[in-house]
Each structure stands twice: as C-alpha cells, then as structure tokens.
Length: 246
Ligand SMILES: C[S@@+](CC[C@H](N)C(=O)[O-])C[C@H]1O[C@@H](n2cnc3c(N)ncnc32)[C@H](O)[C@@H]1O
Image 1: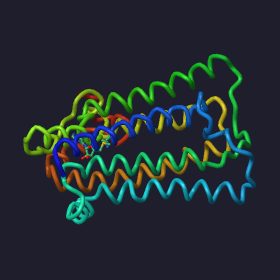
Image 2: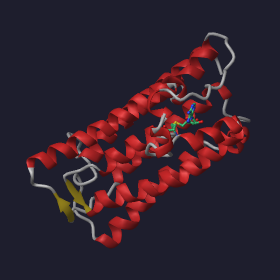
Image 3: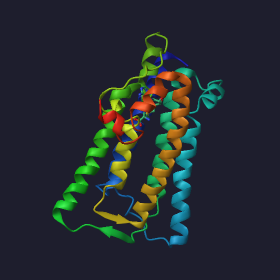
C-alpha cells in the first residue's frame, strides 16, 4: 500500500474514531444527538429492545476484543498491511459503534432519578470527569498510537514501528486502567437512570471486566515481572490501599 494512501486511510480512520467518540458522549449523556441511549426512536416492546440492544453491544464487543488479540493480528496482517492494521481496527470499531448508536432501542422506563439540584450537578460533574479521564488517559499512553495515526505516520516517513513502552504516568501510578475507569464513571453517572441506560451501563461494565482480563494476560506476557509487580502496586480500576501508601 503506498505511503500516502496509507496515511490518508489512517487519517480517515482517526476521524471516524473522533466522530464516534464525540457521538458517544452525546449518546450516553442524552445530549444534542438525534438518537441517544434514552431517545430518538419509537418505543419498542422490552421483548424486542433488550435482545436488539444486547446484540448491538455484542456486535461491537466481540470484534473489538478479538481483533485486539495478538493471534488475530498475526493472521489478519497476512492481508491487511501492518502499517494500517491499527487504523483498520479503529475504523471497524468506530463503524460498529455507529451501528449501535443508529439501531439502539431506548427503554425509557425510569429506574431512578435525582431531583436534588446538588445531586444532579454532582452526577453531571462525574459524567464529564469520566470522559475527561478517558481522553487524558489516551494521551498518557500514546493517543496517536492507540488510534493508528502514529503507525501510518512512521510508515509514511519510512521509519520502523516501535511498540509503546510500558509506563505509569499520572493516574496509571495508582490505577492500572484509568481509561476504563473513565468510561465506567461516564456510563453510570446520570441523574436519570432508565432501564435502557442501565442495560447499556451494566453490559459495558461486564464487557470491560472481561476485556481487562485478556488485556492483562497480554501485558503480563509482554512485560513479564514488571507488570506482575505493577499489579501488586496499583489497583485495577480504583487505587488500591497499597498504591495510596506511596
Ligand atoms: C485502549 S488502551 C487502555 C489502557 C488501559 N487498559 C486503560 O484502561 O487505561 C489499551 C492499550 O494500552 C496498552 N497499555 C495498557 N496499560 C499500559 C501501560 N501502563 N503502559 C503502556 N501501555 C499500556 C495495552 O497494551 C493496549 O494496547
């Protein structure tokens, strides 16, 4: 694949990611978007909405995790050029997220709602803090590597790809997966929890806990004792008592 074409493809995939991230904020927060977790489609019976929503979540989650596994990368880079492997992963995930946003069936049965202005403000603050933690964490790891731009840029400039180093900047010193902590804060912090939002937050929480097991198995395999020691020092999604003593 020509260097310029690969670069253009990488930029397009990155823009697809950005669009899906921005839409996700509106989708979860029921803000500005035409279709959100709670609105935008005529009401479906629970017997339709629940299986459809779970199918949409599965259609995103399974490829998103399988395509991240080293064995899958070894196989599909036989026909996907390595410099655009990450971009293709990002593009695929973004498109599957778009499908979820487009076809999500709201279940607007209110489970809880907070009327107290301070409580509502607090939920809003946690929601935005969660998204901020997601974004900051991507930059602390290597934002442009995570979303494929670094790979196509190195390819375009004729330099070999180098994997990102293990690092524990900022919150990573205390928490192994602050990016996922940010998602969980954003998904759960709402002053008005509907059955549909609860399904989304619950299912994504289960998915994150499962996916982190696979990710950590890979990290231990790749970084060895260093990551093992890290697991002793830092909590998975919340600071552990040990890490607080540092
Ligand atoms: C989307 S990021 C999420 C990182 C982390 N799981 C989190 O939730 O903050 C996943 C990528 O980050 C890498 N990664 C996870 N922890 C890391 C660390 N402490 N240093 C460098 N890379 C890390 C993983 O190998 C994986 O390629």
